[in-house]
Image 1 (tube, one colour):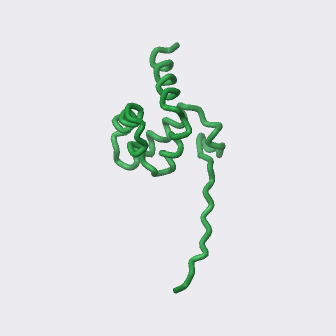
Image 2 (cartoon, rainbow, N blue to C red):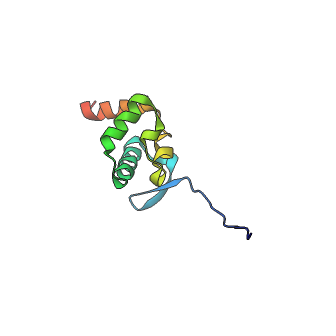
Length: 91
C-alpha cells in the first residue's frame, strides 16, 4: 500500500473585506456575519441555528463549514448576547 505524504496546513485567519486578518482581530459582528453566511450556504436557517446555540451552548447547532464552529467558539455566549442587545437597544 502506497503511503500518502500530503501535508495539510491549517491557517487560523479569515478573509474579511478582501483583507486577510487573524481571527483574534475580528469583532463580534464580523464573526456573527461569517457564521451566519456559512449556515446560510449550507442551507440552514441561520437565525434558528444561532438562537439554538446561544440558548443551549451546544456547538453542533453551528456547522463546521468554513470553520464557522471554531470561529464562534472564540466568543463567549454572554458576550454575543451583550453585543446583540447593545446594538438592538442602541446603547
